[in-house]
View 1 (cartoon, rainbow, N blue to C red):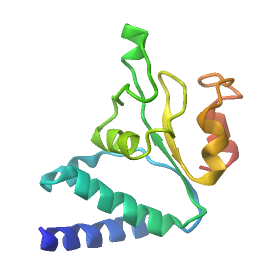
View 2: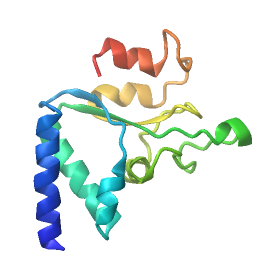
View 3: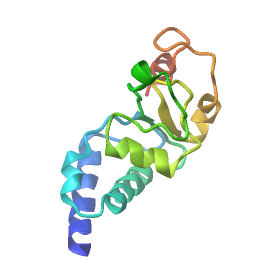
View 4: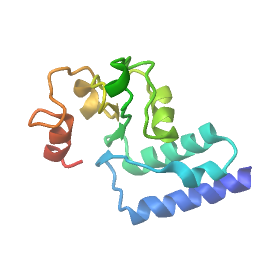
Length: 143
């Protein structure tokens, strides 16, 4: 497995270079982790992914991971600590790794990593897509 991990680290490092990720940037991470699923231990692989991304992004960088919950439109139930994301295994990995960093929006929640984003975590007074939305914040802060 060590050989596969080294291979993965090298490939991810090349990918992050191609994406031109710089230190201390603001990032929104939409992902399809299907390529990572060829490895046996998803939690370990996702940790490698996160650690490399964190190293590349730096200590002052910010990362927002969509943890959308479209089930809310049917069930009208949302618990920011318990409701799973409907947008993939990687987003659910981040929910487990950072359980108290999910925003409160029941449909378009995000897991937020980085000190600049902490004030948004429990902010409850923004609309979903308008001028006070988290998406507007991302645009203003150049995510």
